[in-house]
Amino acid sequence: MIKLEIELEPSFCNSWPNIVVEFNKKLIFKDEICENKKLCLDLQDALTSQNSLVIGMDNKSFGKNHVWDTISNNNMIVADKTLTINDCMLNDISIKDILLKNFFHIKRVDKQPSYFPDKIYSTGCMNYNGYFFLNFNLPLYNSLIDQKYKKEIDVSKSYFSNYTKVFHYEEEIELINKIEEKLKSFDEKSYN
Image (cartoon, rainbow, N blue to C red):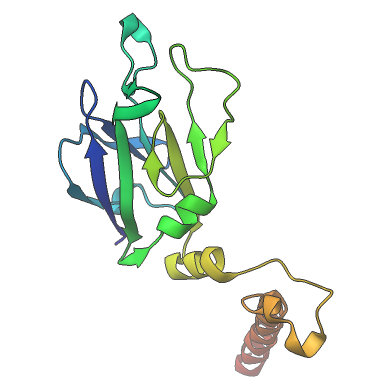
């Protein structure tokens, strides 16, 4: 079973923000968030070997019907509809750092300027309509460890002190698989 927990903090401007949670392209939760809240969702029903999680906000107005969900006074924002992810966990493992590493993807609506970038760095605050995402494979912990800690191998570093090789076990896995195949064929031959 895979359990998703999201700790949310909303801010009000004209209305409260909506959270949208999709798992493997299926909407699994959508609701208005009116107070600090911890969502607990079970992902088991839609789980596959390769999975996609999307967490976003979808109801911020940028001029539709003359409504702006950001109010400023003397160039200072005095009210803003936002939704902040304070933490996000899969089976009690925080994945907020992975979500942030993947950037916030903006979904343009209404009169939102086109010169804004499509992806922005965020500390977890959704200031626009859009989403964070995470792709993960099973086994879950292997996938999360790789995404959190595995780095590109830096070939300029010395062989014996190259810390970027940590979590790159592809060669070892290939060798283990070859050994397992040989043992399997040996067992089959010895029983025949």
